[in-house]
Image 1 (tube, rainbow, N blue to C red):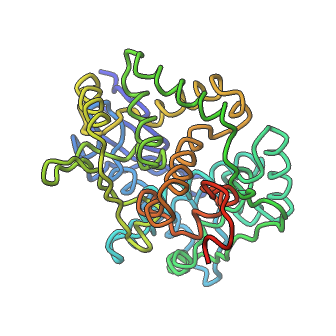
Image 2: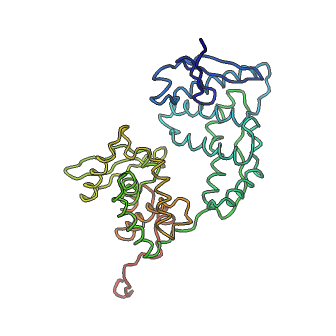
Image 3: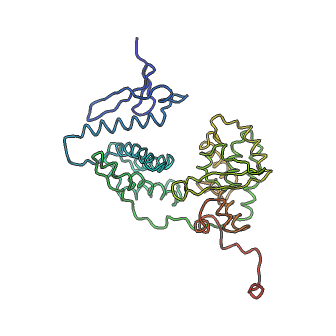
Length: 377
């Protein structure tokens, strides 16, 4: 009877109900049955779990390392080997440091590295050193030509360095590989300008767009936009959020969470009261959504992708802004800053005041009314 084999991911296969690994090392195909099986290996949709992927990456590294023994000379890893080693090293570093680097940080590093390898037309089996400053500079120009904003293009280019973070280098050396920090090109004027408050008609258009979201049957759109516009959350934090981020304190509902950006540094939390009218709609929206996995906004990344297009189509000034939904966060912080001051705006956003005054608040337009100096001094 023929064996039924199904590829689940790169190098991971399901054969007659059992999970196996496969890899080519020095032209020789090697295969091994995974230690993890059943629910530990696959989720309900037969997708490999993170733990299974790590086991596979560890096994591949071991096979590659064993193939390279016999020489004391340190080797330069391929792009594929470097990506595999980074994921394994990050998991070990996280255990050692009690959660740092976070899983999302690791995935972002791998994402930017993947984008660069493929965007620069560098082969995965080529040495990582092929990502030279000149190649990355051409990649930056290419991204600009594709319509990326300068700050976004720079994020793609500079993000490549994350995979050669200082903490990771000793892990690579331990595996017998010579890895140095990836050098990036010198590119000027990639920092965004100071925040400028949108025109009155733009802010009105945003409010009209937001109000119409409630009329949609799929309440995920309204809830996702609400978390950014009402509470200045980053879209990544909304995607990661669960229903437990809402707590009742003496009859008042609060939003409580730790922004991903501060989780590994200051550890600063956000605790913000929720207006009763807003909370009533949040409850109604959550009942309509009926999340099965505990996520506040199920399929959050997909929801934000659609929401971003909707906002760009509805508000002319946002049409050319790649991350239009992020403007919702800026609008909210700027309004809080102008109405109540820097301290409250900082408490709402989780950012320090210096960051707020550059990226999120139009500090050039803060005076509520004209006054005479002699009336103040």
